[in-house]
Image (cartoon, rainbow, N blue to C red; front, side, top):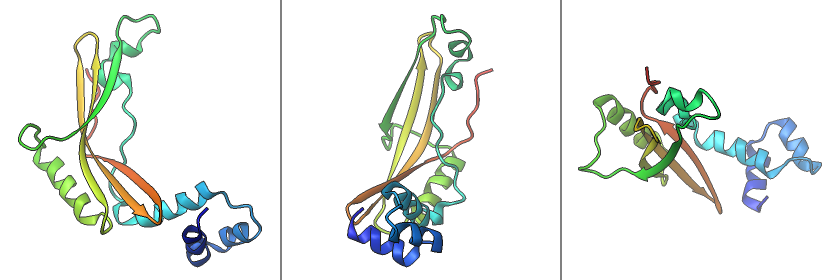
Amino acid sequence: MNDALKAWVEANGSELLQAQFREGFLDAEDALDMLREHLFSPLKGERPWRKMSPVYVCKAASLTEGSQHGVTFSTRPAEPGADALSPAEYQTYARIRELAPAGSAVVLWFRRGQCSCGAVYEAPTVHVCISWNGYKLAREFDLRQRKENA
């Protein structure tokens, strides 16, 4: 735990966390989680991205272990002019950009799942990264409602 994080815990931690810290029982990851919650609090109402599962791409891929369906996943940055967002997705993206803490890196990504049967699911997400005293703290947000294939 670096000095800046120690000072932040001393100034912002609950009495319990401060006691844990003083006695040497506060894990750096717990302190970073608390800091992350604090820094990302302006985005508290936004939907976090949840890891895509094969069933979002192809229901058959998750039916049996011996299935011939194989799902692969990839992530790529959005390409203005080549990628499109719905009006609702763009509105969410713009709101996240506006609410993100000053100095944050805000990047639009596309998450894609593709099954060997040809089924595809693609979802736009927003990755927000804050550099804070040598730490890179990140969160990713979902821009749309996920739908399972019928």
